Image (cartoon, rainbow, N blue to C red; front, side):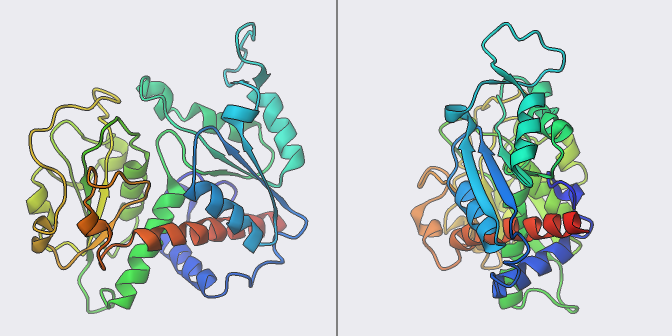
Length: 326
């Protein structure tokens, strides 16, 4: 694995999930792999789980870890090639990437979309320019359109739980996973939903459905071929896992079209599921996106998902370090 920016960088997602679960059994087994190696983590926006799990993942592998909040501590970066830098941008990504590649053996970067310019956001210009000019591997800690480490952690959590509750096996039917849109007080990126959809489609044992109000379709490249259901209650029928997440509209981009129906999940709504497990990537606005009664229930996997963020990042770093070592 050279870079990690989406599920497309993973040859066999199910194998990677199994390897992450093996890593979880003995987290310090590979702590020699990163000896004398440095992981650089760049954040262009706030983070809690991503920052801390990435730091600890590097440490589990024996790496030195350095973190920089680029939005507060770094120079304003110019990303356009051939730019005449006579404005408020101080340093070009070409020069910054050169320096970063000198200091670090692996670079992780987290950046957000503007939610105002769809073409610019979906071009992944910031992430791709860093990859273009870096001479070391790059890991996406979330980009304008995708959050692959979160989706890997979610996939790990699904199969860890499904195995524990005997929902997987040769004689079992496919695991039914539903991604449902949830209310929110502000427009959020589509990255988590896009990425989760990509990963679910790559896993043969998953029966995947997305349910959302009219006007909240995801980008076609991430939802093509997926079962889409605008009736939330119908979509929840027989579900084994229900992933709850808000996202803004793809068209009109970044907007929040009015929703008349009640999309807040409840215990009553969950009665039609197969005693489904509840998932959310966090942070969550309690009693806006999800009620306390579900978040704090025994079927909630939010703590497990957060825990598995560590092993998702660790197994990706492991593969990158192994590839670099030849």
